[in-house]
Length: 119
Image (cartoon, rainbow, N blue to C red; front, side):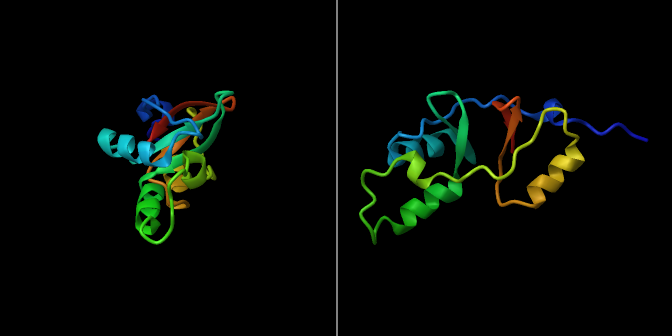
């Protein structure tokens, strides 16, 4: 039987994150500038509390013309984490996690700490 690669073999360290109280429009600008499909949202205790995705940003921009969206923060528009991966998880199991959610990027967690992500 062929060895299946593990998440740790292909994950990348999260290059940057957003604080939950960052202005939403600033986060949208940074996400676009970096070309990232999603960015982890980390609180002051260094805990992963959400993920800001391209879809979250698109949703904000799509309704901005109808509603006053000024003053919104990343916390207001981020997605809740429903799926995560572990570095020792095999890629076939990770693939199933991707198929069961709508995220293009999933966080890789170890001991409740963000150690990377997979896109």
